[in-house]
Length: 509
Image 1 (cartoon, one colour):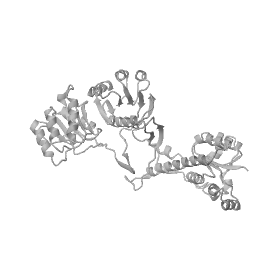
Image 2 (cartoon, rainbow, N blue to C red):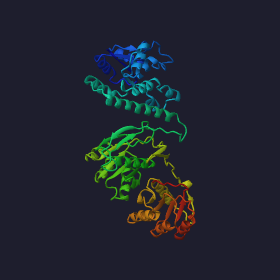
Image 3 (spheres, rainbow, N blue to C red):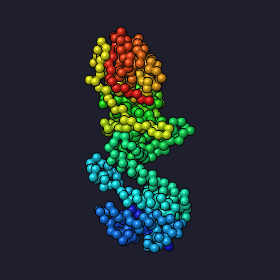
Image 4 (cartoon, rainbow, N blue to C red):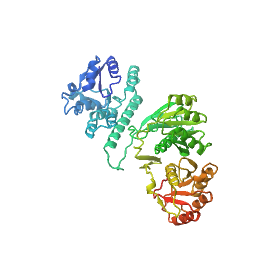
């Protein structure tokens, strides 16, 4: 007895070959619209869905498969005599295989010129209904949503290995697919900042060698609608990325994207160990490298300009895990690719003014979501709270320090000039220890007399200011807002330090 297959796809990849193989296995092919035309053009004998339902397509194709003769044929339990009798009495033939993929909603909204009306027309109704019905009844219906599964299904049918486990695997894939499809639509239509129900979906990019540690499995999933900075546009060279590589690469890329001038960021363990800006990327590399020549070893480097040969020669001299850039000249790529393991990543910075609006953090039993910290504190917004006024160069350095400190793990204190970091103190349980680390790392460097200190949060005590003064720091920037602000201000006045406040805290836990 011939079996019935229903094929209705927007992606016609391998469709004709799949249908021909089904015909060879004695399947009757039922199809709709454009799929039917493609099959007929490929020489496949097809029954139109309207011949099955006895009802023509209507409403510009919005209604064609939403019919009892389709859905009863999908949902009837094959091992239930009453179900099968009802089909027979109604003259309905069971459908044994469904291959459906959905209207291209995601691809449509990725186009900037797409209107809301055009997007709505790409919301598939009949397709998800058929898929869900067939997947619910996977014991009796093989359900295919991915053209890559065509050949495995054919092979299983030929080998009679389309058992319950195989069918369940395909059904689960269908429900993941329809859930993701609905999530993209709901997120497109949602206007509330924090809706009562939030459904996120991600697409698997790759399996990773391991997680934070070698005994932990991991994979990389990415947002299916990359309308903002993306961690990786393309990996051009090197071994596969690890879990930690991607976290560090993301942090470095987000940081370097904040700078308009040529900039180099060296990242280690989610903290910057060297940041430099200059008139060109080669000089910016020098500034970043000189910030901490020891810690940059094995670092993740992000730059916001094309890497040229001169810069590549400098980078090639030390061990680096990753270099991320908008592009590499042919000569630069040849120089860097001499090391077979270094990862060279091409990142698209064209959307750097449209970064992620929200960030999510996994916690036990749930997830936290917050607006990303895109606040950029500008010199006109700085409030001088001391008798000593900052110089023009100090103001530039204070603003540079603010760019850096917001990307450092709290408690965060950095010492910088107006073009590079000198010392970074992070992650300490008290602010004075972070200040000591930053200042002590900065002390041996040339140009220290031009250094400023930036803090991600207010000083609860005046000890940080006093320690900075004792080590010749001449200007400080901090949010202010402590009930003991006056103590820190008085200490700055005592030593002739210029202090400005921003009113904006930049914790990064």
